Length: 249
Length: 368
Ligand code: SF4
Ligand code: SF4
Image 1 (cartoon, rainbow over the protein chains, first blue to last red):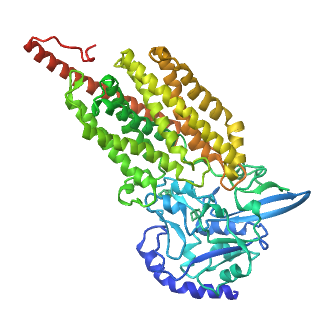
Image 2: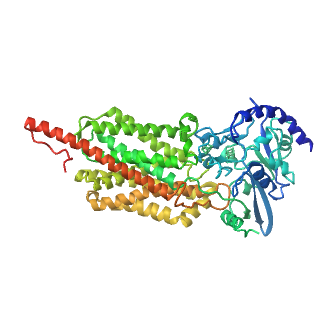
Image 3: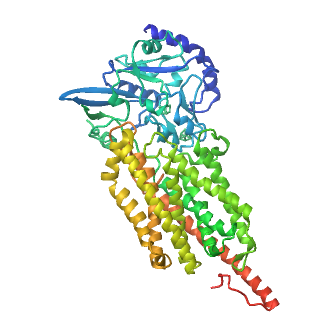
């Protein structure tokens, strides 16, 4: 375990006890755990694209940890082939909920089923969500979907169940290249704060005014907003069909 | 030089708000605008709308009572819809406001129905009720505005986030209301006079003209200044959905009915008025479809378009739509019957009083 992870555990341990109480009083798989009252933390993520190898281990770990239904993703590494004047290269872009400081998804939710905790994590209480889909429309990052099993809105929650227990999100824990770094933005000594100070970072779609808390190192302009180009040559439906009729291999 | 980008791994999302939501927006808009037409007579006492008003009220009530059921059925957790009323988010959610506005609107519709039922005498109302009418009118306008704002508030979808959207919704609502009133007025034969047809035809014509102008501006704005989505918008409007946007959505259902009604004499003829009304009703639907469904097909982050598949059964399906339309027809029949009864009783009452007083009964337009 590196020093950042030890640091992280140290910060998170205080919140864990309180959130355990929260979890005990809330039913089912609700993620409505209140963050520690007036949390000192502001969780965020830095994604160092120089280190991402596009292995999708994070997507798999996330789906396993959070029981994400087949065909849906809380995080995915979008992968592109970029041809600049005959020089082709591959670019990867891990996408997830940005846990925006000004989250439009929270603004529009008519029932306040989705909200931002004191520690900045945007969560959905799926015991309240009516499945209207308004938040899905409002998110500029395609980070949300309606879970076909719970019939409620779903998205990355920074693995709040792990964070509150002092653990790292599953994607961060599993990232082989160490491209995903998670930590407390309020702590000037955390690795995320250090990276933000040391390197120029970008966020996705800054023009949306959402003030994301997921920062990228090495993000090219043409991947920052909606990407224009030639689409993926196969559809989700084709892949899912292949998986169900056994022809995927 | 701009690089060539090809997607290798990425996902597209399914369109979430489909036929059921389009239908709700169409139906509730038509309902609210039809109520405004009815109020002109019942509350403001505009005499020449005497026979148009009951038709407007029937259209407003039938659609207004049935459409919210489609909205509830379209929630993925329909059973929890009641939480919209006790877990409100009025500080920033148009949908939260919408739930309250819609409820109050339906309540005022019921009150209007009861008032008209109890005040109708011999095809005329004893006296207009301006206060109730004003309240009902306020909520009718609020319903139209909130549906438009609910869409235009979504900044993430380029095609939705425009101040023109609520205005287009308002125009489409008036167009569909007038058209449906014409169609029902012809079916139930309440609307007969040249003057009434002329009024409705002229209202439809001018609303269509304004709609042509605004739809044109709206399309130009997106085709020219759609920001990062401009490539997808052009692809959508000129290639993938060219028939839906340009041919059906604009030429056949907005421009053509306006041309049909260009001569005042044609506005008074049933043939041309009915053809224009049917086309315009389709146009009001297609506008919502193009905005709501095609708008969601525009990718927010991905390269490829999102896809919409129209389901025949289940959630947000054709069957849901057919069920709700059947409910509308049922409400129309019931309301026609109730109103007829009120008018008939009123007519008999008036007839009796008149006979006692030795007066001749003036046809209030009811006895047929
Ligand atoms: S990325 Fe989307 S879902 Fe996540 S907080 Fe921002 S707006 Fe909400
Ligand atoms: S789908 Fe659920 S979380 Fe999203 S806006 Fe509707 S009620 Fe809120």
